[in-house]
Image 1 (cartoon, rainbow, N blue to C red):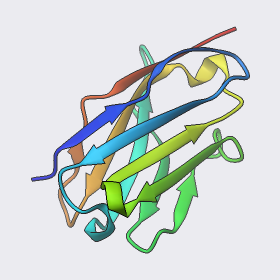
Image 2 (image 1 turned 90 degrees about the horizontal axis):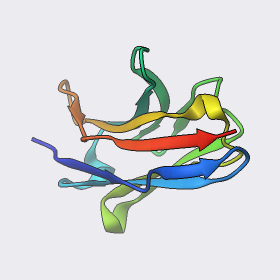
Image 3 (image 1 turned 180 degrees about the horizontal axis):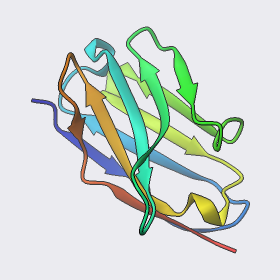
Length: 115
């Protein structure tokens, strides 16, 4: 079982930046797939970005060019650097991990972008 702990959320003005962190209880370089999702009030959870074990990265169109997912194997942590934030980025952000066939989730961290 993989335990995930997110941090780094907060309140920021539009155009600002935040970096989210997700520390895993397992070696992140051994996890097939890790990623970030978000859920805004009244909406379904949506995928934001993912990074594979081979360090390939993928992004939702809504964040492409503004967000960057990365991994620090020495810290067993993945990050989501969010730049040029918009009010529509406001949501609870969740870290996920899929070592094989099961998805594990963190508790979420709130990101609020004011206009």
